[in-house]
Image 1 (cartoon, one colour):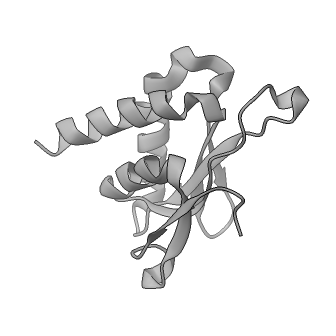
Image 2 (cartoon, helix red, strand yellow; image 1 turned 60 degrees about the horizontal axis):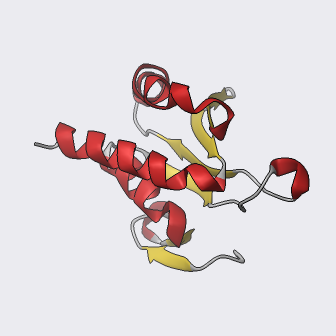
Amino acid sequence: MSPHQTTRFRKLNGGEGADVDVQVAPIVASLNNLGAETISSCQGDPGPIADGGRYGHVAFVIPGDEGWFQLCELVFKHLTPMYAHMYDDVILEVHSDDKHFEGWLRFRNEAIDEITKRLGCWVEMLHK
């Protein structure tokens, strides 16, 4: 159970739903609007990492036969340039094993508002 205030996303977890930290809920919603399925998220804790601050994250997959390609395109072609100027405040990664690829958006808690704004604007532009 998260120590942060949460909201329920009914479409996650194969339709069973999942609790999502309120601060990252807009990021989760935007990624889901892009066809990603969130598999894990946490808003992290503010403050310097060395002094107890903790990175937040949103981990996601894109289902389907070409999901790995779409995930890599989303992370490397779109999200990485969008957040490159934020240096260590935002870290984008793709992890893979024999069965699937996962995208990871890691961030300092203080960067959530900027991430939310940029991602939300981009998703809105795509859907016009």
